[in-house]
Length: 284
Length: 298
Image (cartoon, each protein chain N blue to C red):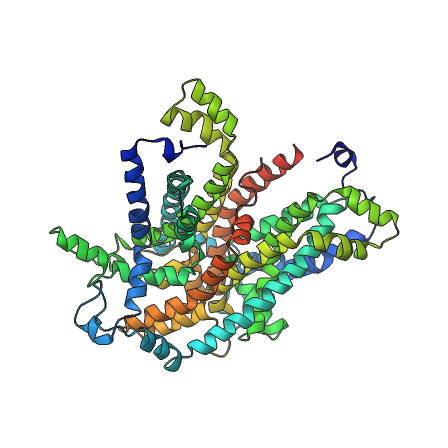
């Protein structure tokens, strides 16, 4: 283990470490603590200049209530859910199929197809912006609906997810698949009966990761959607920045509402999340 | 794994079967329509003068020639380079935090996830949090500066400081990301090698540099790649925190492209900026692909 276990250090160093841990965490999360405290303040508290002290007279529930009653935040939240869930499902379906095709079949161009999926996953969004927006306006009439975002996210995220799935499926023993084929199973039965049950951990990891990626998207929400009826919460929050210019207590509460679902997913499914994110960080 | 499994042939189906095509086709179709074709189309658009509504007018490399004399383009390009350089602090900081947290102490799991927490937040939220932090009137930073007798500054409203301040906001989640990569890497460090090196008298810095860091290479590779991509993709924070201002001083290519296209209705010019950004990114994409595929062969 490196560094040396702290238990083997001198008692003084151990005590220092125990103090340093919480102190460094508070400093690290200070901006977040501040925004949380702000979301509990009254407008008077802020007007009186109490920005960083303990809130006088908590208004926690009132502020969060105001966020939902005085703005379309509820609508934005619902839109985000209705965009994120189908997009995650679609991208998982597409990439699981493609991952199997790339992991377990030898055919000319296999590596090239994989390379294209990987490369596409890294391109800057701006190189796609104008044509994708035009496609959504002129070819598929989805512009300014949640479906424009569902379709685009599903398509774009397929790059990363296919690589992930393909790498995971390559580790499955070929003998298992061979045996099923010998028994006369068709390729699709092999996929659905043998492979799918074995890749549940990968599906869970990807679902959690993709949920946060798509939930947190801001750029495409700006490009493909204009009206409150389809706007997800990230772009909604930005739109409210103008309206709530001086109402930092509402802005902060709104930010926390926007962050809450992906944070909740992370803490609930932490193990899956991290195993997905760190794939490749140990293998050489 | 048993030897029989290893001896079994990999990917056994012979060429010519249509099965793989059927599995790959749906994903490939979506990817071709919404990723591959748009890249080609953007390059085509960049050779035109276009307001997004009227017919396009061919200008050849005219847009690219104009970029050369466009001061804001150069500002944005230089800012992108700053983002890129500064983002290399994320792997370093992430490794430092990972080393700090790589201990078996009660509650360590919770500490690790709380340190990682910023990465889960949307950049919109990160941008808002830091705008509040850097606010010229009441931001904590300024209260701190005044408390030690210095003048407060409005970082985001100052042409010299707006880019560094935005980068600091970006480094927060990026460092958390690199930290988790290194924490995973550290769990895979070979304990026997470390013990053997200790026997040989390796200590502290020498141990870290000669024994630990080489074993962390896969984590370093990914940390650097995702940081480069993160730096070149910087759009959200600039849009939320400064809108490229004051006077375009904090613009980056991604943001300037968006601004030219949708605020100035210069689609062709915007596309040309996107192509430049794409070309820069291609260097890293190629590097990543070559490294990854080479590893695959081994």
